[in-house]
View 1: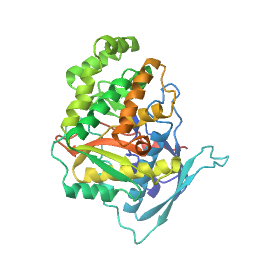
View 2: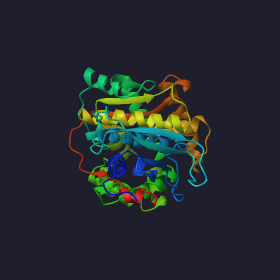
View 3: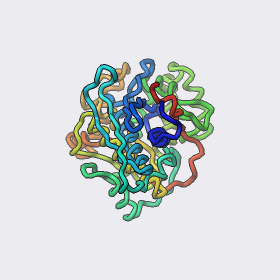
View 4: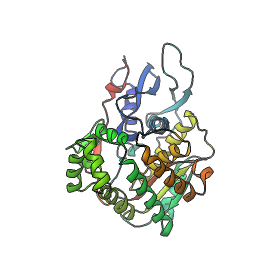
Length: 365
């Protein structure tokens, strides 16, 4: 049993503020010694469809962001974190794959400049300032990601408008699926500004009237399906979640990589790069709105992966996935894209956000 002031607990107390889809926090820790521990995936909730996970990749992106937080936090305590991805699981661990972390004292290490921004970083779903990023801001953000990860900026004219429309089309599709309905019902905490293991509904970027309507519509799938089919139920959410914030921001960024492998180790690397980019944005006073669904759903369509019982939507998805591939230069180019987001200078302070589970609940005893 570790003492309350142990360096591992201090590091993990900060590192647990890594981002994860729907605030799922898909990681657990097993402490092996005072300077050695294991990160392994949390058990999946079989009652909730895994539609946003993208064949498990989104989970490893999140764990990669956690790993980067651990590395940054360790530097603030005079340690270098040795990170060892493990594919083979010894019988007494029972997880595969997992990540082993060994903390090594380093008297020459300096605290990472991004450490103060780990807990401050959050998802912004409202409007931002419209000014474009400066060349200095872009250079700082590009410096934050490792070699092998590239950034495309989509800021002006028809290209920006084209990406906004594509994202809106994917929103229309996903809001019509029974699987995403079940996910939203499970991961949104209603009548809440903060949540430790879900998304508070007041953080969704919806107006008060739309939020009231959303709470009523989500009472049942039949009601949701009726509203979407016959009452234009996806129009207002698309306006408030896609169109308005897509106009009131600096633009979009696209992260892609041809150098990293497509296995879980490569996805950890992608998650680490995303986290450094996001923390650097926070350091610069910028905010980010993730736009991940187009990446996931185009992957499903491109690879003929069965992901929904709403078969009438699959043909529509295939059409927009083809447009998505064409937008980014063809299927071979779009395959390397792993994250899309809006970015801009914050307009208002974040008044509602997801919190995190207590560290004690994340550690296997």
